[in-house]
Length: 118
Image (cartoon, rainbow, N blue to C red; front, side, top):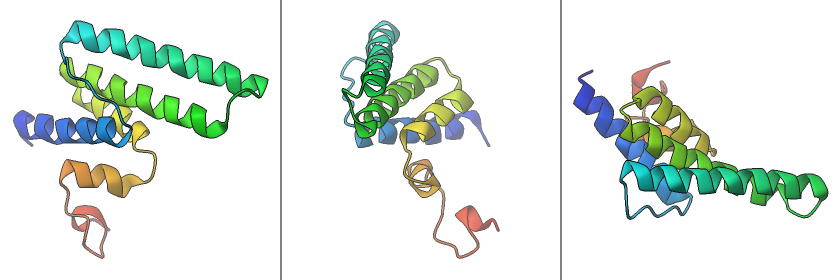
């Protein structure tokens, strides 16, 4: 697959992960994304500590985790690391693989599985 098609597919996946997790990123410069990524990672650590203390729910931790993974996907995408970006975005789209395939534009309507694969 040509690299521009890979980049387009992964971009859709990352943008979908950001959108589904309510993460708005108006400034996609590498420095701004890196700053946001650190803020989201800090939020995950705080949510984990709060969860362990009984001061937060598993749901709150999961939401923080997904948001951080979506931001990490954007960071990886901006660096041209498409496999890592896809992995991170997929972690943010926790529901199931069909959501990720939808954003990638794969034909997952076949009874044989995604893109006709068994």
